[in-house]
Length: 368
Image: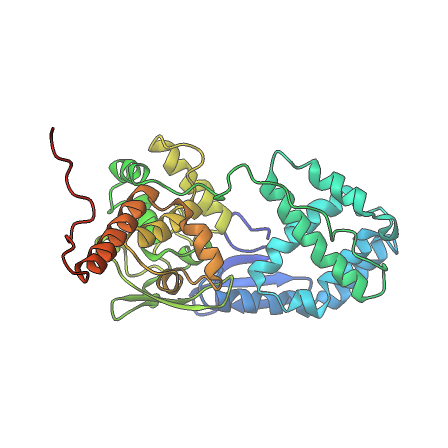
């Protein structure tokens, strides 16, 4: 989703209302309305989507005229105005549209009926250097081409049967190590803006999009309580002592804990770019990202012996399989030690029940 220099979504600006209060104003093609709530929050984006839809009918007709009938571009116009797409959450819509628009820029003029499996396979294979981007494109193509089949625009989905690219890193994005966390904290103490950002990501286990909208309104009885933007799941996370120390320095007058240098909430990409600069200042490798701290939070919980359900209660994951993928970087040596120790305790307990049997499974070797 495009955003303005102020960090707001496209068509939005900060303006003073008739009472002198600074508010967010949406203005586009005859539509002018004030949006309430924290920018980029779920309620704010719901109002933003409604404001976009007020002029969407006319915009869709203009877009349809400018696209070639029967082309992939025409399919995009139809899909964006479908109930299937519009029922998605604003954040998911923006992500899906971004992937499709990049593909549309290269292939939008081509006839949809000519798109074959071999074409999709070759396009995805060309992205072997960036397997995550290639797999995201394949996922989006499968969805939109399924929609095309449902509308009788094509007889079959040519993206089905195309294999996903093999990720060079089977664990996905890099999970921060304890040494990397300590190195960041040595450069950015808890009372700094970067230190607070790390504490929010690491101690709540939430996504970047949720962390940048967190504020004091989400603090209730010693907990961070919010509804995740991506999934809509409600999470309630106890405030970790490390996070409590960082929040002790946070201003109580801001809408969000984290603010840009201009005193406005971060946009998702704006936050990532800023945080990357903080990592560079701490001399950390490029693989260190905000999302890697969410994975580090799950890793810490796994190493503490938490179950998948307990971890999901913190992270908000809907799938336990996804939790398992996130905790793949847990300290395997530490977990292996725990597993063997548990096995030995079970064997000793079993052997102790047998008559005239020593309770020690592995006696110490005697010197000859």
